Length: 190
Image (cartoon, one colour):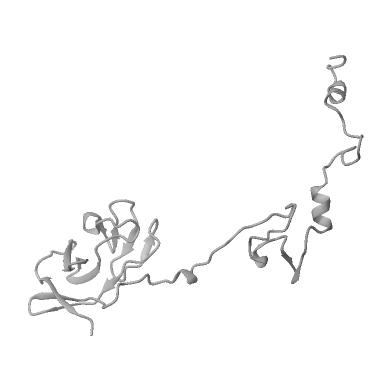
């Protein structure tokens, strides 16, 4: 059974106040009182560990003092970045004039797993001169198309790789810099 900790007297905070209390030698709990009810959350911001008791309590949100990440007081849900994780919350009860908080036996993890967050990887381009061998085939434009694996550049790649313009691509037909200068009006004879 998770330990229940006697955190503070029931009259320690007024409505709209919050304060951090040491619960264990390595855990601090932020106690918040709103509308006569207590809420217990992690005392440090998950972004860079800012002390949230130095932040602000605005309506139903806690605002981090360093980078202004916002968390809902009721459930610790992240409302505004730069933090990426929700704040862990702890069950609270008031009994015998004291505030009791139940801490989990294991460290709190983020409410959302990283697998639940959509991730996009971009690799390769339609004009890439060779297939992307270092990326998974289903993420690479030139590594997989319509269910078939492409080995090496196909005709579209060869066309896109070919230099464009008259005379390019044929030996001996490319314009030389001095010939190009002669074709510009007003630059004759230079």
